Amino acid sequence: MESLSSTKHNHNPSKPNSLHLENQPQLPPEPSPLRKIIVVASIAAGVQFGWALQLSLLTPYVQLLGIPHTWAAYIWLCGPISGMLVQPIVGYHSDRCTSRFGRRRPFIAAGALAVAIAVFLIGYAADMGHMFGDSLEKKARPRAIAIFVVGFWILDVANNMLQGPCRALLADLAAGDQRKTRTANAGFSFFMAVGNVLGYAAGSYSGLHHIFPFTKTKACDVYCANLKSCFFLSIAMLLTLATAASVYVKEKPLSPEKSTAADAEDEGKSHGMPCFGELSGAFRELKRPMWILLLVTCLNWIAWFPFLLFDTDWMGREVYGGTVGVGKAYDMGVRAGALGLMLNSLVLGAASLGVEILARAVGGVKRLWGIVNFILAICLAMTVLVTKQAEHSRHFAPGSNDPLPPPGHVKAGALALFSVLGIPLAITYSIPFALASIFSTSTGAGQGLSLGVLNLAIVIPQMVISVTSGPWDALFGGGNLPAFVVGAVAAAASGILSIILLPSPPPDLAKAATAAGGGFH
Image (cartoon, rainbow, N blue to C red):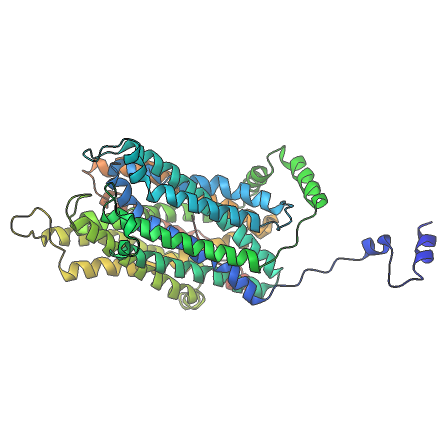
């Protein structure tokens, strides 16, 4: 019957029957033009602009609201928690979204809108807290703190909500073409560096509030007004880039039938928790090289996170000798730290372009990762020397308790540390992610799943550092140096394990380890 039906209908070649179409293999989708990939990748600049402002300005800001230094790190728990929970959930549902606007664009638009709401809550936390009854005479402002915490957590959830679908859309546009995939990753990393430079440059400039004079209020001083102004620029940039990408780049909607079939298949495999079921299954099948990679990555991020969390606070407290909310020294140190982070981003961008050359020069990617971990350890240990030099050369103006800026050689030494740290940070953002993809091929796991496993080795150390760094520093009289010293030890251990235990990737795949890129939020 089947053959008769085919013969009967095939006399009209312009309208082949459905059975004939089903038996034909589907052609793979064509890669999208490079201009569309660049437009989508540019969203990373808007996301990273806000992230750079978080790293450079928010820790001093929460202390300005009255949160003690010991407790400030707990605020940063949102980043790793949302990275661990939000990204897998959003990624899973964006794969199966049947919206007529496409699979990824609805999540990108929702994430951008959530960022706008969060930025408003953060920027106006002091004003809203005062409106609801906070006293400006007291150091702690509980209502402002509550509003800030809600806004900050929304901001980190929204950033994670943006990143996953944005990277997934880039992969969709590349359509499996290796050259386009490498270009998309390079473009995303490039725009991350652009966002970093813009964010740190904005954070280091103290006159932005003049552009938005309404930002300075009775409850919001110049530092707070500058933070508001920076966030206004950030959200304007992000909304512009996200809107341009959503309008210009079209997606083909996913049919409800395919989404339902995928859901049924995943529920059968993971007992109703598909996105986390697949992740736990990947852990059960991990081989020794991947476990070593997770250990090295874990130690690497134990080293990085204290500095990323308290770098500008270190400049304000230890290098400039300032006190939060007292005098001008602390604010000057924070702005100098933002300048250092901008220099760090410039070096990071340049080093990212030369990872493949550096790997060949030192004899492989694992040796390169080990070497830069030793550089990281030395730089973190050098923060102690810079701090002691700053304390030894500290001077005060006559009749003032506000210290003068440190001598030029002290400030130059601190900024040099920021700059040199851009090299190991470039390796941290690239090689571990590529090695995870390479080592997981033996288990048949996909790249997305392997990166999900690696992500846990990043976010868990961040949570540990967020919880323990404040009390740990308090044991030694406060300040940031105790956490930095622990970071130096962890970096050295990570370098040793990388060189001794971490397997080298196969020669034919070693080049791939330098082509992939990554990042954290």
